Length: 229
Image 1 (cartoon, rainbow, N blue to C red):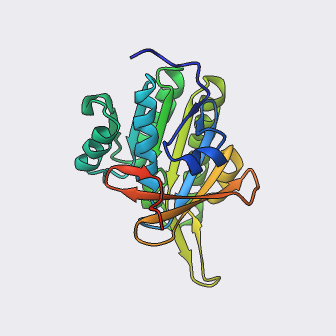
Image 2 (tube, rainbow, N blue to C red):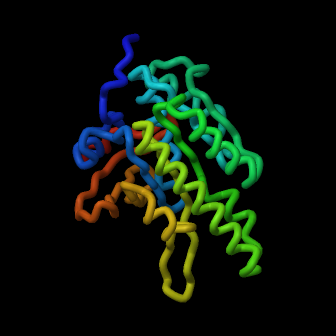
């Protein structure tokens, strides 16, 4: 397989998605993808990982919650016709380990062309105590991690994809991503995923501001074109 490191975007293989994203997920930029449970976040993240490998790019998939099932990885690898061993997965055990890894990735410079951090806010949520003074320190540490990842993407022309969860705000009847203000500030792209039904999903671009959206289908093998209706 020939190296294609000069390519500026990594396609998802879904025409509608790649079209509104300018060809796919771009090297040199930080993306934040969020959505409700079962909206296709991890499936999209694994698809980008496999697509990057297919292009000869070096990638690291960071499983920040330790909940990624090995079967899902093998199914995506089979769909993209890549070796399972080519998908480098790093599980994270606690917030401190996550912080250490972020710093290490920056110091390693351009060891990886693509870094995916799935459920990136998970360890942060676990550390929150409700004590304002303690949580303020935690908030600053989390902001530092995101700032370093933004610098990593821009300085070393790497794609950094952060995947986050949402939480309910009962008094307003809405759902918001955890640490949204920090992530919105640093991310070049904010992508919201929503479920149209159990299989078909919708991606909305929140940043840069636009009305564009695209539909896609989720399966155990990643993301694909929507079913013909």
